[in-house]
Amino acid sequence: MLDLLFFTSSRIKMQNARHICRSLDINIKNFNEVTSFANYEEPRILNREEILETSFKNALNQLKRAGLQKRPFILEDTSVNIHSLSRKEEREFPGVDVKYWMKEARFEDLDLELMMMGNDRSATVRSDLLLYLPEVSESPLHFVGKTDGKVVDSPSEFETNIVYPWLDNKTFNKWFQPQGEKSALGMLPIEKADVHDFRKKAFSEMFKVLEHYNLLKPKQYDFSAIKSSETWLDKINCHIVYGLSCAGKTTIATYLINEFDFVHVEASDFMHVIYREHHGIESQIPIGKFAKEILKSNPHMVAERVLKYIEKNGLENVVITGFRLLEEVEYIERSLPSVYEVKRVLLTANRTIRLDRKNLRKRSNESISDENLQDRDERELEMGISQLAQKQTTKLRLANEGTLYQFYDDYVNRLNLKNSPKQVRKKNSDFNVLTLKELIIMALYVARGDAEKSEFLSTTEITSLINNNKLKKPKFVTNVGRFFKMHSNELFEIEFRKKTRRYRLSNTGVGFAKLILRKFEFIN
Image (cartoon, rainbow, N blue to C red; front, top):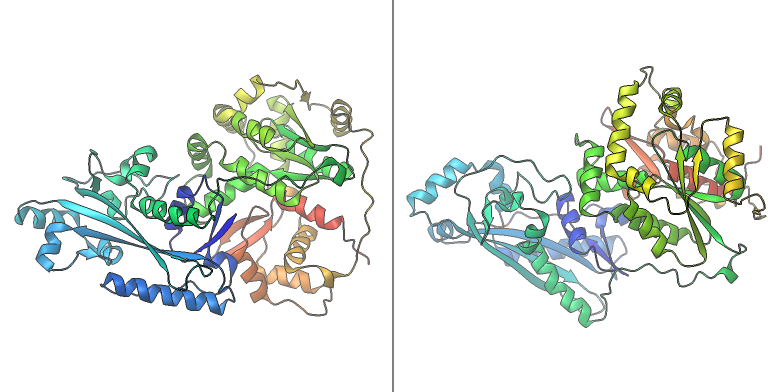
């Protein structure tokens, strides 16, 4: 896999780049995701060559300051040439200053000016992409992508695409009509937008160079090192458990963690990460609406991240909850190596029982009505649960309508887990051997209450909990804050309250805490 840093302050550019590279074995990360240093300083200069040169030097300096001078990186600059205005200004206009120009531009003014100049509405959007490959050259490699079109005849009212946020109603994409199309770039379906994507054209030129240096491969997951002879297990269990809300998915996952050394992976935790990557944590876009739309366009997106997580933690029994689509389940089944024994499990319970459970675990005092739960059921069934239930090929269908002990016994018997051994592991009790990541997770684990009723904690509160363990080198709140800045991943849920980010463990994070506890134990 090629690890590529992207110097950009734009979340939208990051998502555009990841979309372009989605089928390739390229791991694109923002510079801020791997270091506490600030992104490079973006100069406001009207000359393209000068802005690219200055931006590259600033980025390279930041790379060296972070001790990452051997890491490849990219940076990108977008510019617009409205041809008639460029002739008038005797320079490319608005050119590389388009981001700032758009903040003040009004379509009525632009339209009137174009009409007065003969109504030549032709325009070109250009992407300049710089690639730094230190093993190849100390100078950046430069790639250009261009898309021709025109300024639309009249503006349209539309919402930014919630799945592909670069197709938006704020940048020049709302006024730019690519050649051969009848509407603005921001309004096009993704299949057409990809054809006219100026950044994609620049990236495509970069891919040719990466292929030349044998640095580009199709996306793949490396399970080649996993063989049954290398693990204490004859077979590695993978249970994919699904069902409607409050059917018992998290309950049985917790039981499998505690009794049979399973790792719990909650698919919705990965969806929350994808949502934050697209829209940030303060967005008002409902995550349910976003999830429904993004899974329509890319049904494997969450499953791919789940697979990568399993690969990273390898050689462990795993229980996956939270999948909504048949395509997600089938993707895991065909992608895991044969050492994994994959079983689908459908959990059911009548709505009255599920409603009681939902209200019992709800944090607020306001109860959920049967109508609320029915709406959620219908949404989940529409997304794909109904298809999953109908395609129940393994015939493992468990009703969870009795006591917990009945539920556990039924599951163990139906899944043939009764004789499954737990591995005996040597444990350490010295907090000083734990990494900062492990200390944070253990602090949140100890502070965790009753699942959804758990409190979100500030970095100051988390730091205090960590230092209660009498570390030889106490941690500082800046260390913890820096960690979350770089690692707001599937292990954590994030709440934004009173301009402060607060954190707690996700279900996947609790599963990871259990992994730590296999090698660590608390001693009073």
